Image 1 (cartoon, rainbow, N blue to C red):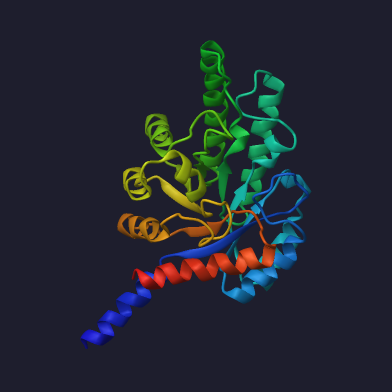
Image 2: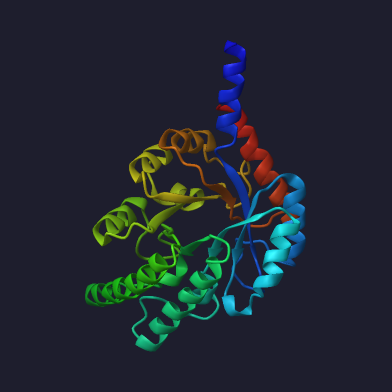
Length: 288
């Protein structure tokens, strides 16, 4: 009887985490994402036991919903999340731009992302599309107020559609505000929006946070999505990040979302997709 109960607990713990991997639906210069035909990647992921796929989408109006639905259904995958950073990376539109026309473009683009997400119950990621504030204190204050105004409009729209918006702490070398999880936790708490959350990325955490474990514990209950990449920004096991520490903290906080690979597709995309799920399953099995 005790053995059976132990086995049941083991199965329950193994089922808490889900796996997805990030691929782009269009050509982009952003390196830390899978490229090529995303439909082929979806099929390959499904063969390895993935249950979700994360799509980096520059313009959701270029995505045919029926095609996306068909690919997901055929491969028994869920749309885990939608990445929006290419709008900034490739088109330079952001929520904090000095030019209101550019800010409005960013807000409209994110609303289009939300409309797409409604068909799949996927969360929307706010990463690079938030923009930059600059070094001048006056400019920073002004642009942050622009960001607040823009993100509030996006969150209000998402709330009406029952879509979660996750804001990602991005390291200081790629973005100049919201680099650490505690800053976003504070912002969400003060905003009052219940549909806002945090995306924690192990690569960025390795640069900005003093402790993986403490950061995750302190960020409860805001953590809604997790990106996985090692310190090399390649697959887990290629660097020095203690993923066992991350898993322990996620388990203690009751996280039940995706461990989504977002990394350099090296030495090639299929290897990265394979190594990601194999390495994370190994860590999960070792720390049940």
